[in-house]
Image 1: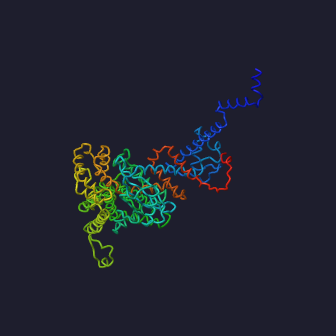
Image 2: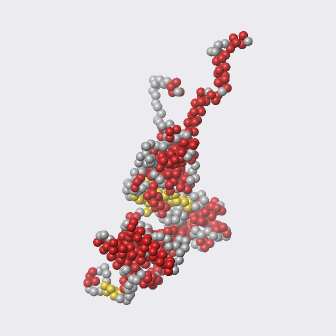
Image 3: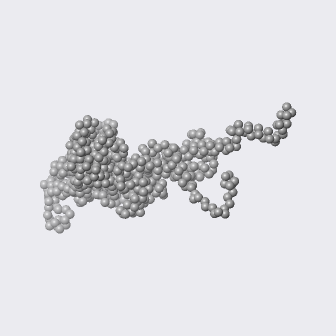
Length: 638
């Protein structure tokens, strides 16, 4: 034992020192390096929890199109803005988050700053755009562009891409919104080039372009206004809508009068009650470039006729200014005029014919073949109405006048010629029949037919007539091999000389196959045909034919998708948020519009992109040292 005690020695002996080091080696959990690693891991977990919570709040606000910031975000504020308030609410209901945020987080690592909010939103938008670009892949696509002013009076260009995905489905996706200084072709081209370069899109795959602008767009109502009577009619309609809806009091009075009328009709049994019937309504204000908005206005004016005259009578009796009294009296007189009623029913009927086309062209999955069919149908309806619709309109107008106690005119009576002062002074007259049949009915219908022929003249062009041969209706009755070969000639970049040699035989094999396949017997349009070909694998059996179908489907039909972007823009960038930056607004719009894609993206993907963005921002250029520079390696290692 003495020898052992001598070997052990004092406290600071070699033996005791070795024993302490050995015990420390065995107990790695309490070693300094392990303690440092443990602390770092805990810090990483806390950081990740905070960042995920901030991302959850960001996702909610972006999806709902809500503002992030508040006017006063100080700790003493009662409302610090949506982001901070929702972040606080979230942490109070989750213990794990509460322990690592706000007062429990480092002051310089709160992850709630405006820069973090914008970076998270940008990461969300970038992930969505990446999904869209990857979905397009190497396929053909077309471009749909429109411009509009935002709430800060800045010209914004919206860009939507149309393509056929791997399932054969026609897809239209919002790519971006870009601020442009003006709307000249050169400025738009530069903005599109820059956008394509930013997202890695190739112009060589662009197969269609669609542009629209209110400045060069003539809609049905604008065309009809070429007739002086119809032009005056819409002026009076606008005055009626404005005067009856000028205040909340007048609107409430109109609703009450209409309610009392409905109750009376229900009591008398003239109308029946039921689900969705007799609901509260009011006059709709017509838009500048939408057929449907004018149609809705005329429908409601005719159905609320007595109520509108009643509210105008109240304005005449109760108005405090002579101007309003005089205007109300003049509008009542105008509504009781046969010419006004005739114009109302004529335009209501014409807009009813074109309204279905207007609604269908706003659908995202519309294709050019189906649009051509609808346009042809509308043209035929307008021509038939011109030939046979006079008596229909005349009977409707007369019945309406008798119901509302409006004097019905005799069509054989003579009236002075209008619109020509010299002929009027000479006492020249025409019959009411000539005035209403020729000067109003025929002239207005002819104006609209002419506009439709001019506006949709492309339906007779060679390209679209060739595309129509792909239509699967009536067991592919329009299929024509020679026209489809000509269609391939119009796309020399997509069909090589070898492809063209094989195309004719493949077209014949294709039509022989699909006409005898029961899976294609119920296919009714070109879009469904593409999906069925992918589903049955025929897109790989007849790749050249499927390429023709793809080229037909990517052609843009209407600009409704990009117009929806501006509707969303008015929700995201309001008058209260009119100082939004262009990039911030674009990120918010991408997420708000493409919610279905956003729902499929996991938090992990967004966080990884956020970290890459942060890393790139923090990267510094490498230091350069001269040969005489002395580096303290110990401090560098530390």
